[in-house]
Length: 352
Image 1 (cartoon, rainbow, N blue to C red):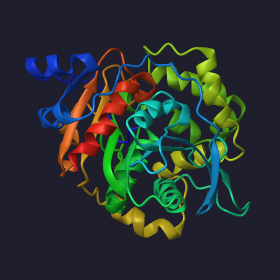
Image 2: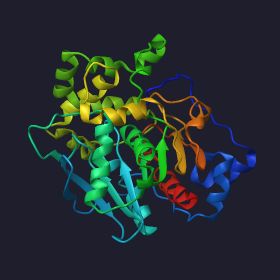
Image 3: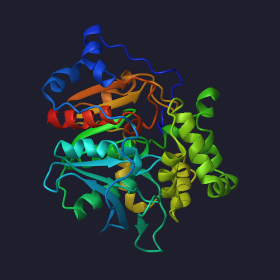
Image 4: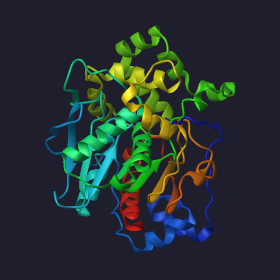
């Protein structure tokens, strides 16, 4: 979730003409989106939860990992890589993937390190959750799949990872879709305290900083995930079957170690690995994102997020659009609003 926090509820008001044009998608978009939208393939409506499974999952060795992933669409189609958050998994995209596959895209949805069927190749590898390590995993995956470049989309951890790839390896990122904007972690900035009401939103991060928190997450990881999902998406009425499909990913033997290290690393309580130092130094400068980008936000996001796009707009220097997805949409935007997310992927592909 977002590292720079403001508690104001997000509000975005486009002009009346833009609102009418976007109404069928339940999206309010900034003016820069409109010309590309008018030329893009229109994604058909889909009811969230229409799909409940992918085809058989695949497995490939890539870098430090054996990565489990779902794949949809033609093998020779333009590539799209979709990245999950915490506490979520690849099923955040179970309704997005068929929409993109039908539009001719090759869709790759990997389990991040510590989730699902993804495993470390060596028991000796440090279970590192820092942002540069997670991003490098995706570059390694693209290399293993012989994907030179792709449109990359994500939310939460996945949005941060997509942002990082766009910054560090812009040639590998044809276009970016990032829920909640610019998410790259700045450890130095995280040393500054926030107002108490803002700190309260990060209670789980401080809980994870303790041994009690680690043990608690180990013991109650499913209860924890259900609670966080309910807070982050207060209007999303997911059923037990939907939750259980995702919660199985948390049974990964490295899950707790990766999650705890990630949150401790963010606030300087755990060291990363020196081999990522040069990458982290680049990220600490707050670099701009120059690839074509669309940022999305749900109108009912209960997780920490920016008050509006003005807080991060200057970080995006390429062709850009921002959209607020309406209808009670929370933090898990791809699963709650798959049509809007798939449309953003197709539209940003048309930007380049």
